[in-house]
Length: 207
Image (spheres, one colour):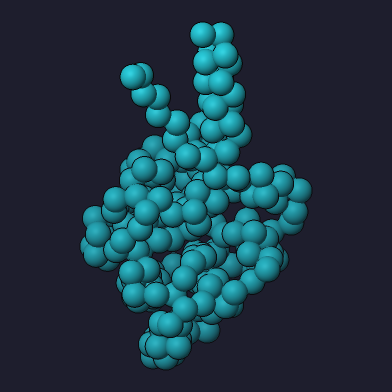
């Protein structure tokens, strides 16, 4: 029997509506942002460490973290030991997360283990430049220097270099972000999945 594969799709219409119709959350600083669970495999301590190092080298930047989880309290305790604590913001779970996502200048991910992360799909669909560790799942969405910037897993120096580049080269990062919008819509949007199923049903009906 003939087998046909149709990649599962994700409804990104809410993100697309937010991208085109709502204002981003107001801000005055260059924002490195994260949205997701605050659990062990998200490896958020690496993100805090990298931000702390960058903060010593670039002015007027902030780190905004949305989400909750069993590691949040200890991450907040750790963040309070850093000299840049005034520019680290733990906002918890937010109903207006898409407004915050739109306001991010970089979406950062330091996970050690993922599937294909929905939060990363949403960042791509929103047109927010992505900087991440290069792991399975993430590499389904982000190709280094094409749809975002990737650093080897747990290589904080390489991740910092990617983030500094993202801060210093906004036009190039927007080019990568635009490519990510096109990629996620072509390969992962629910509308694309629906079209492929409809085409399959039409071909089967003709038989």
